[in-house]
Image 1 (cartoon, one colour):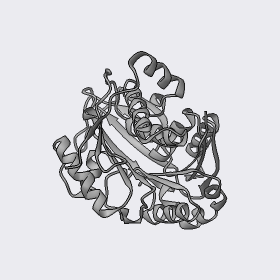
Image 2: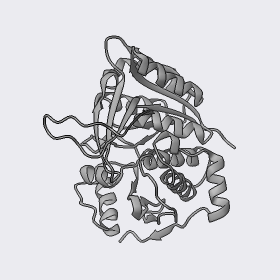
Image 3: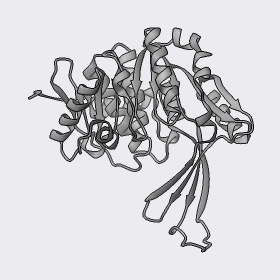
Length: 319
């Protein structure tokens, strides 16, 4: 199997999860039912997702000079991700996400980005050797926008294909993306970037058209329980129905999908085959609890495909 070289630039957080009966009122103290800590951050998750699928993965990011940073660096090492360009920021805490999960499974999240927002253009320029040796650059929007912009510029300079996962939802000048690049928003992110409210599959196609008027990149919109919609190689649309699974937790679905897509293309698969691989990777993540604990290995995907096939795709005319 061909092993693509993937450079991930993005956030690293330590997720602190509190299980509660309900959120306290102003001035009220309540006991939590449980507490746990997990490595997280979209950049961190996607780097590990790619490594588990068999890619060579390097990461650029920033953590604080604290024990939380120690935990995240150790985790990257254990997951076989090159972290030599994940640097420490003195006098700044590592990114933290405080996740409150109530008895209904609904959550509220507060993020203290810390060192993630200290990642700089200088950090990117200081890692040009990584760009020169990479096949793909995988990016998200949990770091400063000027760093994302500079990363895309450097990738284009060295002939590296960019995959932008524009999460979390926010405006971004996607016009910088080239025709060789890929943009992978979910429903909400696509609505922000396209200006189209996605209430149906027809509206998803309309959103892809709107994205196409803003940039030349190939687009894939993940639609949760409705599957995914993408552009085709011949100007039509590709619809991927959701895989038949029992959903336990969707937290890591997008990260697994992006890793599967990049890995599929990097392995030399066609666009349609790479989309099917991505759809299966995302589906497997939904059958497991947590973020990184849900990310599949390639053997998990192969076993799933052996039992349930590689998934359906439908080609839809562009009109």
